[in-house]
Length: 150
Image 1 (tube, rainbow, N blue to C red):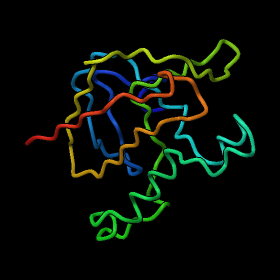
Image 2: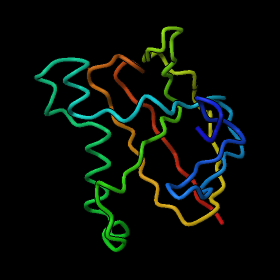
Image 3: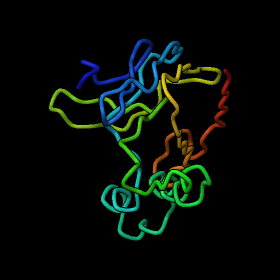
């Protein structure tokens, strides 16, 4: 990738599909953020857990709902085709020596944060989805706080 690294941290740049810098990570007290684990979806939940897990909500469903009902997304004519691969801030998905993904306990802690500087106007979708099938965080996602300033 253009980052020349698997995980994002301070100094990493987030690029648009046209190769323009959208955001730059300017501070990171966690140290690494997953770029390959992807968003959970009904389909991946059935593959990882069981077929009866299909109707459970997921991050992908949250993104689809947001893009269909947000006035800014509607005004811009956005659809599911405009949802790119996500970044799992604070999630720990290590890659094994064999090249497989593992879903491990997070490397974050209360009070950890990431600061980013927007280099252009951006639309940000956030999902703090309680994963009901994975014991991560004892089935209890912690609150997320988002601050935006000029």
